[in-house]
Length: 172
Image (cartoon, rainbow, N blue to C red; front, side, top):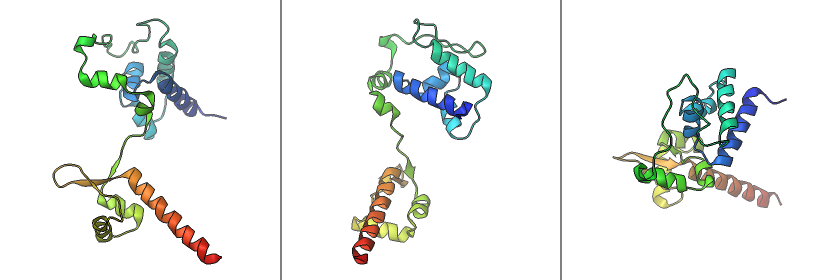
């Protein structure tokens, strides 16, 4: 049996994919909180009132122009900005494909987290980066560096595959 929270997440996810609406826009228009979906993923509970407001927004969205509104207890925003007043960033974001908007965000890992994920010492990581046997860090500003999480995960999977491949060839 699916929980209310599970059903809510499923319906919201399907709506975001179907409409291509960014999660922050959905949160703002549905319940007046742009961080709603990020907080729910982080553990915030879905109350009945919140679920009712969000699902009502989903049900009203697109029926007639201007019918899907923010809940009455929240400040209402004006309609979409005329094309001339939209910023270049707004226009670029509206032209992105749904796939680009729903792809997971890039996450950077700092050295302590890379050490924890790989089990390697920081000095070993630096040596392997210099030798080209470990993903290169990305400059995050003045002297700050970070590694792209997906690259560290891919490197780890490669090490697992190489280790298991060597174990299988030695067992034969």
